[in-house]
Length: 170
Image (cartoon, rainbow, N blue to C red; front, side, top):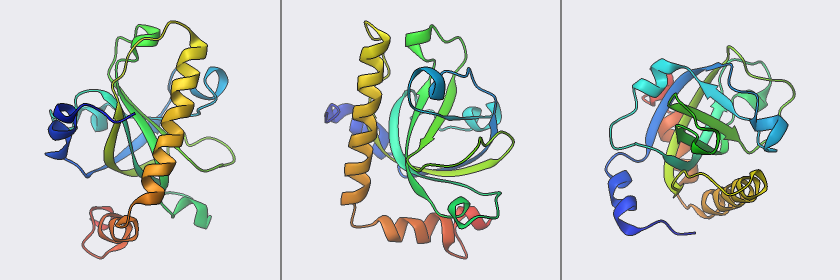
């Protein structure tokens, strides 16, 4: 599941990439149809992406920032899509974040801070919904493996989320 070298090089120019955005209503497919509930980010966050982050499935870290529970302050591994959702003939570019942690409830109106660390695969249309679900499950497994094997994960959390000069503190 290793992406082509040229694609990796394109993204290495801008990764890791920190983002912050508001969770808005999506299409309602993630949790209901795909076993992958997602937090869709607002248009301003999507528009602010650097041009090198075109489309694809990416992995990294994310957290929900407005909540009293410690679960809302800790960054967890995440997999996300950036693009037009070709499986569903999407007409609008979206950023959809799936945090690999079980939360109660939804995040509508909340803020998400995230760090895109790497590329998983290109977005594409699949022959069936079952094939898409299989690919999403593989994306989650790939993300867990990649994030669990990173030697710099604690440093990334400190640098981007917890440090006094981190983007999350600005």
